[in-house]
Image 1 (cartoon, rainbow, N blue to C red):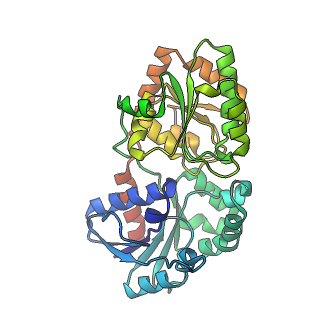
Image 2: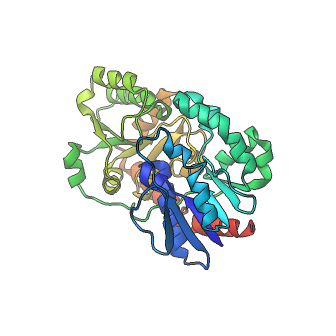
Image 3: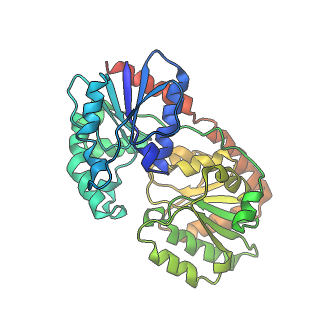
Length: 367
């Protein structure tokens, strides 16, 4: 088969879908199967071995051309390349292809429908107008967790027979490390609590901040709270709360950290806390566990699917529950060591090679 991936995320994003697209393509290429792997992207970049690239550039000065290409020049390029299957890793397409070309959509979450307040108005409109048609026309829909698949078939029952969950994999570069230089760069001192992800309302950081305040008041420990990630939208209330915090000198905002720095940040944290309200998968939880960090996260959406028996859980609207878990875990070396071992064990069950083999098997069944 000639299998094409619409891989704009490689060039135009930096977080979850970018990581997913890059890692699944690398894993598929490493299988070295008889299939031809074609990467459609906006510009030349890092070349993945055993793949072919098709560059469909974004024209400067044409409003919305990035999106327009999905309906015009990208389908034309795919037809010209005589591909058998087209995979869209960012769930927004593929569009305008003849029926002879199979369409596969990767769905990361359904928040534009389930929690529209998590998205800007333009994103809500695009998704609500186009996604039902994308799902109907798709020959198959791959979700990144079983919970996301359940969300899909609850909202769109017709997708039941043409959807499959394939879990994300573990980046083997994420492993326990003691590179303290990263801490020095950001002015972090141990012990510290860590969060990694975009700073935005969906991540529920106001609850983390409230729980941290109570933890500091009720404990002799003087942990820093380290928030790693870019500032997203609707961040002003959180920033104001941090500025007014009596512990503001112990709250570190690193901004975006290079991916190469994350293993040290995870490994040296006493506890990784991920208070998210909803996740299609929750990649930072897996990254933290791969680095042997004890994990506390919420008991909603796909997070228990990722954290398994290794993580400790709280209800996302209950900061007191989070405070109780922090008081229980922090400073308790026996419990910390136990959850560190559990994290590593849980992380071993996730593999990009496994995900790639499952995907190739699925794609083969469509032809």
